[in-house]
Image (cartoon, rainbow, N blue to C red; front, side, top):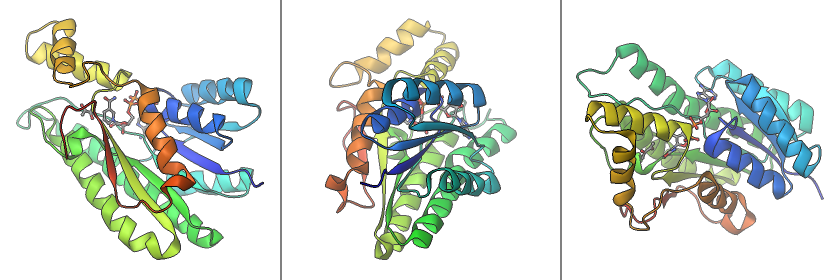
Length: 258
Ligand SMILES: NC(=O)C1=CN([C@@H]2O[C@H](COP(=O)(O)OP(=O)(O)OC[C@H]3O[C@@H](n4cnc5c(N)ncnc54)[C@H](O)[C@@H]3O)[C@@H](O)[C@H]2O)C=CC1
Ligand SMILES: CC(=O)C(C)=O
């Protein structure tokens, strides 16, 4: 059977690394793509130790369209095909709208929104070239369905990713390309630590107080692990999800409902 090939952006740590590990365990060849070459290498090496020679590290800044297209070309050169593209890379800013730094806002939109746009464009171009169909899965967020104070730029980028995904799903369906998204709530990663640390400072609380107040809003009374998110991505990537497109799945332990 032909081995399926997946690119996961931002997979040098956190949710992306969990997705890479999960899909490698399911038999995919994995392109561990990250802006940080060291962490990408570490994740690829660890997958190869556990799952055989099935992962390679690639360096990409998803904000740069030419780098995203080059990534797809390199992966296809190395592995012969592409079946799945996970637009996972993302960054966050915690700041009031009035105090947001223009350069930081622009960078966030370039990484989160345009990075996802270029990822869809590059992956769909390759899927059409292959004539095989394919799957695109985007990292949205609970912040894509409800805005929060101090998350203006971040939330704007995630709402936009959901709209972009719905448009792409309709446009690419004739080529058997599905486009879906995952909407995590609170996942214990470095990104979340940064959010809780900055929010705690702004609200003059300790980190522990801030984290406890956030977890208290979750119906299941625990934050998600990166593996909780990887399980949903694994489903969306599987043939069981072939008839699902344009959807966004909340993984928030019952914090909110769509
Ligand atoms: N942690 C959470 O609670 C939630 C996270 N998300 C989303 O999930 C995705 C992954 O988040 P986490 O794993 O928590 O973040 P993280 O900060 O732990 O990991 C993000 C990874 O993306 C890489 N990256 C950053 N900018 C990049 C760029 N320009 N090009 C390529 N790689 C880049 C980083 O080097 C890092 O390895 C993000 O899109 C985030 O917005 C959504 C909802 C909740
Ligand atoms: C980081 C993130 O997406 C949330 C919902 O806090």
